[in-house]
Length: 417
Image (cartoon, rainbow, N blue to C red; front, side):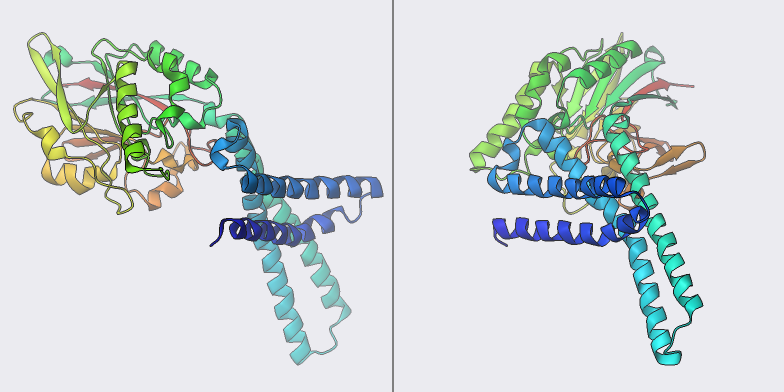
């Protein structure tokens, strides 16, 4: 479909959705004073004009050239408005279908509808349209709050794991896991400075980063180099790549340009002082005791995610280590390959899902749409003697916020009893 035609269709859809949802707004403001009606009507259609203006600008200026705040937040706000109106419009549709069936019934069986039916119909119309507005306003409020507050409400989650074969020298080893920073979604360094403070407060022995440093290109992380260089731990910082780090979602001018981007992100990890594990392993040492840390490139069980990882290569040579810890970005790797072929890998550290940045986590209830795509989507899982921890991610992508599923810094302590 031609580029311009996509935007024309987009503008047409925005107008249709807003016209349809306006039925509910018009009914609610019908009895207000003329001044209030004009004011609310102008506010409503002002947001419509705002959305269409953004689409028109996007036609003239490539999206990647936009000021970051506009690209990330202004467009997201417009998308949230449309989504919430669609949610509310479902109730208007229910009312319209109800009135259609009632009209058909009356036309066939009682051609002259009674006054009582007319009154009941009008009353129900107002009731359903009130519900439509409420059910549009609730998610709108939640999404806005998620953009302003929850997306930066970082939580330190602490987990204690018992690994019977853990050498005594490593008893109490404190591992801090970060994942899915998505640097391209930050418009200032302030949130990451807050994260750095939280990291330093944990006094971790070693730090693992499990992929997705950027959204699309290496340049997104460069403005935050000074902060990432301060992420340190006595036993080192070890990292791996996520699906977004390869530049697979960008139309590159050449294969060489894409390869350079990948090499640049590898070099950037080194500049931070992080050891990037590319289908390889290292050993952590305390005195005479050693345990192995394996890291693989992105490996996803879903067909849409390339399988760059080579666990066989990373695992080779680790057979005699009493404990093996694996960094693998995508949690689907655990069931698909780790558990089935490498039962000696004790703990796998993953991220990737973000918990879809939306869900409910309260005592007794943990739900997110992510569960319909990933069997393991957040927190700790165990099968036999093997563990998987899925970090909820630090940053965000797409929707610039979080609703219910808060950004996470994980601290895992290992014990042998």
